[in-house]
Image (tube, rainbow, N blue to C red; front, side):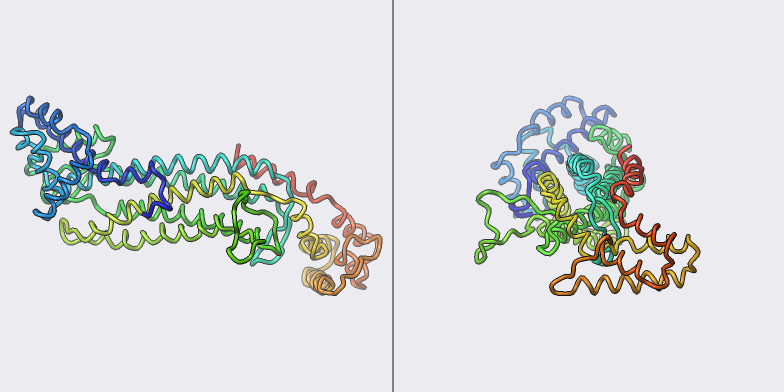
Length: 451
């Protein structure tokens, strides 16, 4: 992944120095186990750890790369350079192992390291979403379905929904980590013919992994497909929240907006512009993470006990997907932490359409007062349409007193609405404080989400 969308801690997991360090740890732990089993001398295992346990400097990495150019095999190049560091006892390194034992176990370790960082990212995001949800718990705003005004909700309730979604993502990530945290030290075609299973158990224990039940020389790629699918789901949640912010920042809506630095510029041509660049950027980054899913699924069907068609894919999608998602989660957290919220604009927007968000409550009131549902629906709909058209008049007409809005006025004047009980019940709806109407159920939902 390009530096623009990389954070150092996650990028470091995929650097050659970390990869070779893990490769060495796998080989050294295997040698320790072989020594305990009496297969190699114990002094050789100590010499291997002493000689090879050196930082993978630029010079060492360059040496490995030069050898690989000649031998055209990355693990052999690594082992050759390692033997140069160790000396005579280097002949015991990789005894009975095959390349996939090192490569797949290393990938499992790197993925678990990456997952731990992603989990911490989600925890930080959850903390911000929880704080902002409570802060705006009863800031009334219009809910929209199909992009059209529906009924009232609160901005805090919107954020509580996203909090619950990312809590689910946190649990999915834990399951995905367990899925890929497997170790394979089983030799060619996975039969343990040349390496004792106890070596695998030792390496797995040292690396905090679990032995793969049946490795066939490689770890089955259904595990990795599930892992990258999980990352894609999380990325889609990032995009869903980003898309909500993008819409709410539109000039015609402007209920929220991303923070804007003192020296920030929105457009090279139009100095007034203040664009939702962070949420737009997150939408794009989510596409990159999701792009890993199809290749990961196609990696599942390998030939017989193994082939390497998956290898080139994973060398790209593993670092790119994890680095991108790490960056996206951090960016989303910062954006939501500094998000500017405008309750007054929310109030103006909900009042634009003359109380139409109360149409369902009006419908239910008429039904409860004895009007048949079909007739009640016709009454409400025709008067709602009148109020909708009234919004389009230029200039808009003032609502006659004492009516709350045009929807209220047209309903009361409708000949099919009985005076007395119906009129009183409808007036109570339009004069009720929305906060009083919503706060009870919002409180219940918050208790479910936040405890």
